[in-house]
Image (cartoon, rainbow, N blue to C red; front, side, top):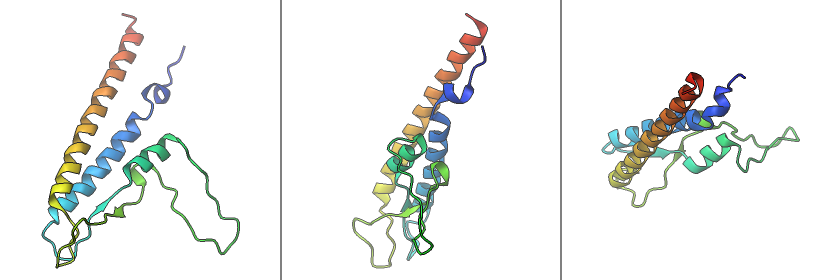
Length: 132
């Protein structure tokens, strides 16, 4: 009986890609904390994962030529949004270093836990293949 690897791994590979992209965005924000006029960017993480998993997805479509376009990219290709600052600085920079570091740390923990779950899935598949 063949094993469907995509079904066995579930959303974990997509989640890793999303976590990786978010880490990159957050690291860029931290690196530009002192850059005048830099606008902090992030992604709507929960919405991206739900959309990638297909949970609660509503398909939008334009029915007329004049309709405004919409972005349907999901997963790691989802668009980066500008973060609303808690307290913007005088030079126009919207990076809050404490928030960015906290988000980066939380994202790193989620990335690592997803890797752990993925490792467990591979071990389970290997056990099933070997028949132990």
